[in-house]
Image (tube, rainbow, N blue to C red; front, side, top):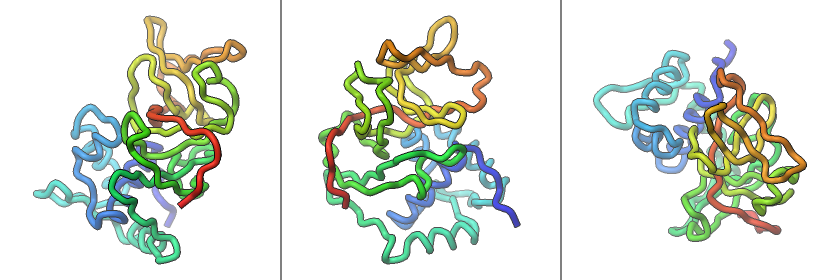
Amino acid sequence: MNAPLLTPRQQQILDLVRRSIERTGSPPTRAEIAEILGFRSANSAEEHLQALARKGVIELIGGTSRGIRLKSDQLKLLRKRSSPSEQMELPMPGLAQLPLIGRVAAGHPILAVEHVEAQYALPLAIFSARPDFLLRVRGQSMRDAGILDGDLLAVKQAVEADNGQIVVARLGEEVTVKRWRRDADGAWLVPENPAFKPIRVPSNGEDFAIEGHAVGLLRGELGSS
């Protein structure tokens, strides 16, 4: 039987549930999902969970805040990824264990295992908010914001952004770093380099998603954990 087709956001939530079970032994609450992914309310998380349940990848158990159960095929994948040779060690207090994302394949969730180049344990104090992953920057479109080719951008996962925030966005088959702007004419991804033109976000929202916003920047080589 073919695996169900998930939207990027549904895959993002499924990956979050898997990671929570891997690290803590229990799934996240709706409120935790909403906080981590930047939803306005727990109801938005519930809607995505209901969609995942309809597609048969999870079961929802009533009467408990953590009533999310992975189906058998997802549990098999979880056990495979949690083998001793692949298990991720939990960071010490005050540190965050962050995956470094390199090139992202079109149509694949940004935190898919195949995109992770390395893991880094980094002090939370160096970031403006707790990040969820590091993204290797490609190109010079954000040069004047001090974000250069090869830098590591610390990103907090979110599906929305405030006007003026630097975001990681999926547009068509590409993942890009730009400044988010919304005005009377619509929404824009704005570069910080006059050699590049602003990109207008499709008004219908198709083939577009905000993956997160920048909470820090690292430059130079890091030792992977």
